[in-house]
Amino acid sequence: MIEIQGLTKKYGSFTALDNLNLKVEEGVVFGFVGANGAGKSTTFSILATLLSPTSGDALINGKSVVQEPREVRKQIGYMPDFFGVYDQLKADEYLDFYGASYGLSSSEREVLIPQLLELVNLTGKRYEYVDLLSRGMKQRLCLARSLIHDPKVLILDEPASGLDPRARVEMRDILKHLKSMGKTILISSHILPELAEMCDEIGVIDNGRLIAHGNVATIQAQLQGDKRIIVKVINQLERARAFFEEDPHISSIELIEERNEIAFSYRGKPEDQVKLLQKALLAEIPIYTLTEEEKDLEDVFMAITKGADTE
Amino acid sequence: MMNHFSNPVLLKELKLRFRAFKSFSGLMFYLVVLCIFVAGFLLVYTQFTGTGFFRPSESFAMFAVLSMLQMGLVMFITPGLTAGAISTEREKQTLNILLTTTQSSSQIIIGKLLSSVAFLILLLIAGLPLYSLVFLFGGVSPSQLITIFLLYLLTLIAIGSIGIMFSTITKKTIVSMIATYGAMIFLAGITAFFFFIGMSMEQMSMAQGTSTNQTPFSPITYFWASINPGALMLTILYPDLATSLESLVGISLPIWIVYIIFYCLITILCLTIAIRKLRANMKTNR
Image 1: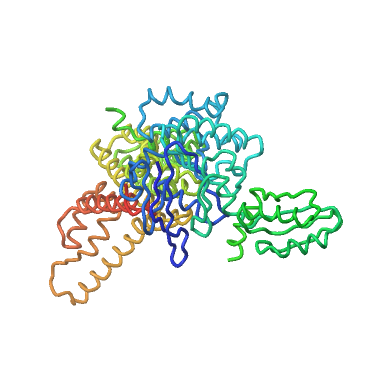
Image 2 (image 1 turned 30 degrees about the horizontal axis):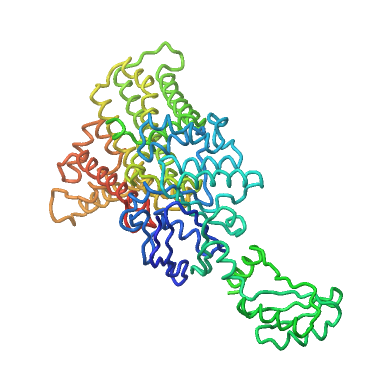
């Protein structure tokens, strides 16, 4: 379990993280989304014990990243957004080195390395030099490395960045498998739809503050704001407009004459929406269809990150 | 038990070092320089005919110059091996991953230092067959050879520690290299310069009669001489020089004692700084 308590990180006058509070239960895949510079990597660096917070703390399975960093390191597997490899090591030697670095015995490493390479589909590359592997393979090898000491928590900073579509799918499949193994996974990305596919919960971070937190549907509802409703009528477009204009929940009415449609923003409860429809039928407005325009996750992300860009 | 004493960084570094072509080219360069010197020395002393003979005193001169040359090479190579130890990991973006393992900062720093020291010891051992030529002609005692090698070892560990420290506290390898070579030049050259200035000033004041007492006492001049690797080597090779130096500066403490203390302190200080600064972004160094 991960518990972040009032985490703040300041660099001089710049606040990279502002009183971040978050709780991720065991076995949950949590997606951290935000624009570049929003504070995702700073949060992950603190959780990975690479950076001290200015104030606040984070507990990983009850161990404090500030007070017990060495204990925390035993609990986590960390994959940074950018990482290098040792040129002259082969894939199995790379994993062997990190296994030894986590204090695993040589007999334990001998058993684990083939299993991990199989997990990340790199069995055939066991004796290849690491620097000769493709980007996607290196990412998968780095993921295997983060699993070498069987951590309960995985902290993956943009694991799919820079990968081609096939490599992304492979990475996603591996993460699904890890989720089925009961790992608590904290994963970041600036691509919201990508996270929505594999995460149980999502947190949206903007300018160092967590602005939304919950499951994907909740986040979408929380961030979407006003609904956009499109009503198609048979003739009588002007009469229909006059009718809808009277409703206090409606704003930004737009006529689309070539399609006989009226589009408007609606800010009301579902019950109000039912009443509006009933009133329209009683007023004999010839409504042919009424649809709610769906914003996709990309639109939601663009909307929330627009604020960050303009500030 | 073995697991407790093993150092993964050391083993990895040794593996990487001995796989790299530049290690072997460096070793070859080192041996070629020594071979050229030894061959040149022999040819000069035998008048390029090969028919002349080689006296034990000449053999000792060859040993002395060979030892000085070897010290120079060690001092030249050590910064190159250690000044990039941590900064290269940082530049290659492998350091962050290493720091999230359960290895302590001291394990990482010591592993890095020992791997460099191991390679330098290999260089010294690889040069031993050339030293054996000296024994072929006589004039050198085994104890002198052992003392010289212990001097190399202490010096290379100290300079290696300086390199590791600069590599930890600076972000760029090039800056670390410049700083380490600067420190090396200070220890080998600037200290000698200060020593000669101190000696000149002492002799001038003695000649002008401005000195208050007749027996000289120059602790600072003594200090410059005692931390200079070349000066210590000369006093080991020619013990008469040690006596002359002691009478010149008015301090009878053998300079090797100060040398050992100074270089051990440098090593401890530099390694402590490196260990503390490795996880610079963390409040605790655990």
